Length: 232
View 1 (spheres, rainbow, N blue to C red):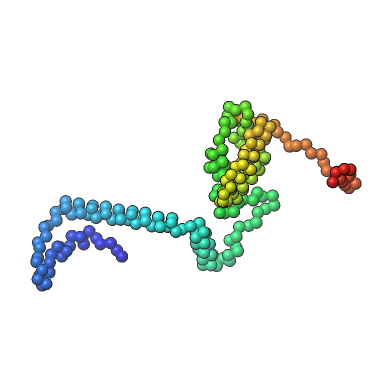
View 2 (cartoon, helix red, strand yellow):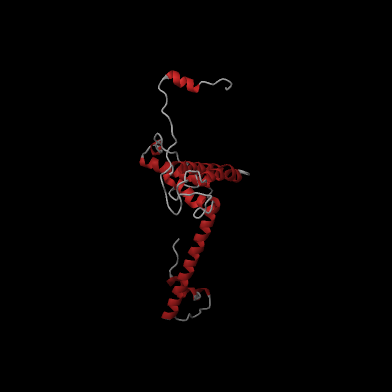
């Protein structure tokens, strides 16, 4: 339905009676240019206000009824319809399997989309410690260059996504059994950031742990893994 124009509000027939029906004819005062402009501005302002209120009500209703489950269902059905219209088999749009050795990402329904989002937007914001002028803790702002740090932070992210919706003790378990344990190891004076500092930056002084080559002789290899006397 289209909205009436301003001229409709100025139609003299709206103010005059019907002489044929015996109505009293009321003479309408002529509109001046100034009064016409004022009325046009008023009508325009009322329309904008009504549109804004309608948008607000629509957004509130959508937020109330559009649950995450309903959103995923709508998205799935919409995607299927688009693929069908384009003549693309549904399985053709599936993501390829990760390559060997590639780090797995959590499911698409996770709260954070990447490890960087998890640490920058949540973990490093809520887990605050003095690491710049502290002799008890170590930290490296280039933590991505430390394999152990990346592995531990990635593990914390996965646990966070698994426990964030767990009832009852989920949050406590997340902190007590995972975040505190890993962060204490990362900030330890003998941890992966042992030779790094916030002021002096990153160093690569830590080397991989020594490891002797594996024996090639089958008899030697069997002797190494055989149980000793008195031990299972």
